[in-house]
Image (cartoon, rainbow, N blue to C red):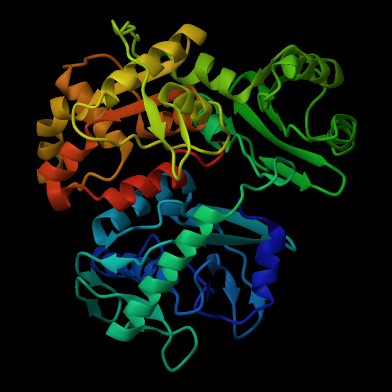
Length: 486
């Protein structure tokens, strides 16, 4: 999420390896097609150079801010409606990400693009949370003035602090080392306290609109307030539909002061009286609080439409895409022991159960010698998950069965680097003719905790695909794309 405060802070600074200002957008609707391609290149060059920034900037967020003149220190409000590509930022972002995926290794898939209103003026902001690896061109990049060859690492440090150029071998080595250290430091950090954890229902609302094409977000929405001091923590989306009254989606953070939040919404007239309200909130970890949280929200906000985020997603967005799970019922299962480091030992099944019930810990890797019983253990675990909750989404993918499909995908100039590639291969192998998950729906179902995915035999994929399988990006995507809210 991009806040007004963080952008206002950026506007007080000079351009640097992590901040780039543009007074105007790169092109207009009248730009000739040949020139348009070069301007696309300019945009990509700026974003890629921001990803790498320069030595000493690992761990710092990067910003490209359009609509601000550094020389004048003045905002020049953008009219996005006058630029066709920017009328729908969601579609534009998808197109931009596709271009970046084709152009570079380790593209910024967690790139955020939003408009920010400051002093009544509209800015277009690109925010790149600090990468954890270097971004290298894998194809040639044509910009307005130069052609940059594949294999080049572009950084923002030349004669000026923010000018773009190719990194030297020494600078490249140092950047790689710093990104690696930053990545290790992230892994060791303790999870943020839940009380200060930012969450959003934006993806849920966007996908609800995708499914109900007659709906759209009304002008001036969403309204997002994150006042941690007063614990007024909410998002409200107003969805309009021709010839019908609007529907409001209201997200109430689990630690919000409900009375203060309600009074703030009423005072600012953010929701029309007697309008349909759908309230979404987090599912509490303490099962005793499940109904109490819903009951309180229903009473305070005077609506019966209160759901936990995962509950709403399952019922209204993706339950129809969940494949039926058939329990394995492994006969003569022998309890295994997990080596969890040092001299500690634990029942392997208990270790898996503890991981599954933990918070903000999305990935578990099980390794061991061939034939030791890894697959049998996981099947026993999946049965226990199903027995506890028959609605749990479970997807078991045997990599050995789909490796040929993955090879076909890799040969089509598409490096395997995402869980969705494995899902598509599984569906093709099964000749599935129903309506499957879109990539965004798959991400949301995993993020909401509604879908548990097992990739069995991934070492075989690594062996057979070689460089066609980008393991680093694959692992990174789990934490950057599939577990953003968690």
